[in-house]
Image (tube, rainbow, N blue to C red; front, side, top):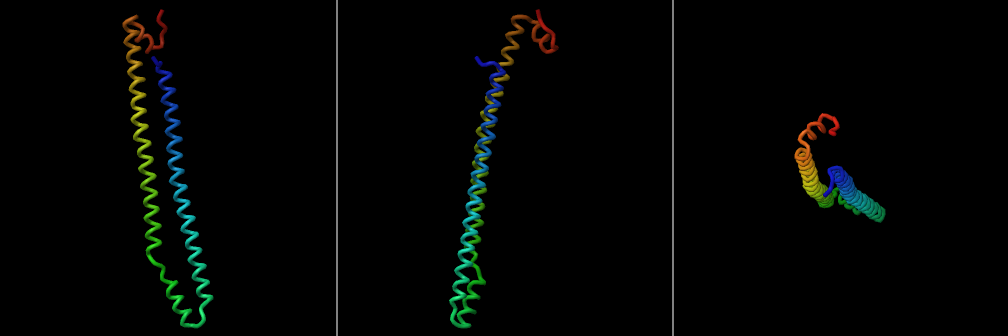
Length: 144
């Protein structure tokens, strides 16, 4: 049978693991968001360079005006895709964090319940062995 101290040490170890898992999950979401941002910046740069190259390749004023009008009107699709991806990453990260917290809260409740149950049993056993021991223990007095 575990002592209450061992159970509390075990609970603290579980807490450390919870924090590590939460940090890992948060960093994973942050990494995905950073990768999305780098990809979006790269795509924007490539599109800009393609537009500049097309403008430099224009042979007359009509081509230049046509290209300029086309390039000045960015499509809403890339922005919608980006926003959708950011939202998806945020939702998935939140769900992962919630799952970790829910599982760990349940585990911590079990540990604390076991510790309290063990303590209560030990107090009852002390009381049965020596009826004044629990009162003396709470008051800080030693029982002979």
